[in-house]
Image 1: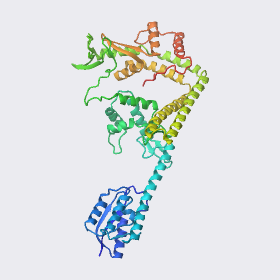
Image 2: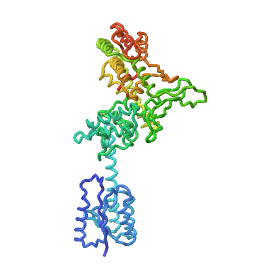
Image 3: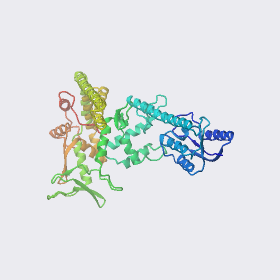
Image 4: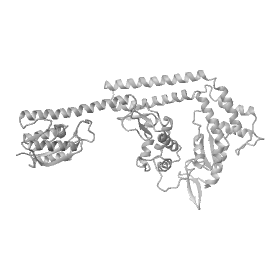
Length: 521
């Protein structure tokens, strides 16, 4: 009498929902064995896909068959045994060598004859074809979804999978926190570790309620999905989902991530003004040290030249920075007057705005033409896939930059007016930054708006960039100093208007009046 192993399997990712559960298979197979008077000597249960060879329990069962543990197998259907050619071939070979004398299936007929093995081979082939065809259909569906600008899979943190539209939508609360992560890191004043603590206190955490790992924070900061794109098989695609941050902010974060190649050691003290100046005598970097409870800054003196520069206390240096920042500040009445004049200019730039928008649209069309040309070259095998992917990603990134520039321009209207308004408001807030005790904020302000930052003879010097240099020169000319305005010193309305006119006329086209990012937060 033949003895049988009972084998039941169901994959956790099985797409065919009609396959019986393992419990149901075992029940049906035992009833079948009782009706057919089959002798079951052992039962093997496995929860793993059969698309690829390497199932441990299945292989263990066949090893026992080869050793004579049983000469028959009972399963629900041949596709429970194999959906790949390796496992199917091994079963058929065991029947050829008479190690397997019989196979029983409630839903399939088999006997150990050439015709029976032929039909079994066909059943295994059909199972493999089903898996291969299903895989191809899934891949085709994924490619079509990507063409529509939709990322496949689970939505990243800050977004939700809409079960109705099958799209990814922003999670209002978490998207706001993700944006804050980018904004804080873009200042350059926070490490990934400090961001982790701050954002946890704000309420952004893992699914288990724990703090996000450092690697997760880094993954968020490098994911292009948050500015409106996504990667699929190494290619960059423009997404149709609502972005969480701007492309510009994302680029700033990437630059900072790249620059931080030497992370600080655990427990190392941070000196807020380190990295702001170089020595005005020898050109070396300025380092910092702590002595007797006070922080000092000095030249590293690493070059092979004599340098006579000495220490300067942080408190003295901070006071000088405050005076520098105050020297380019605009008082509130000046700012209000200049903003009023801005309002009168908003109707005078319509024609130049139309020309600017059309230029950007033409550049976008050029990028689209390049993408089409690259695709044709790839399909015709003129260039390799690696070359196609590399060049396509660059052109796609450029196209998205242009599209975002156009979107921002159309949304904001007169861009030069907005930049000028931002500058006036920033200059109006400069005194607040100067008087505040946040040294990181002072450093950030001077790094954004100053160049040639030198420290010599215990005196800091900075050349302000345009148009900050004009405000500085005007104040010097008026003899207003750097410690704020007195009412009796305040320039007249005509003089205030002169500053605005100078700023307005710095660029005759009004398109690049303030190319630098003059906003300060």
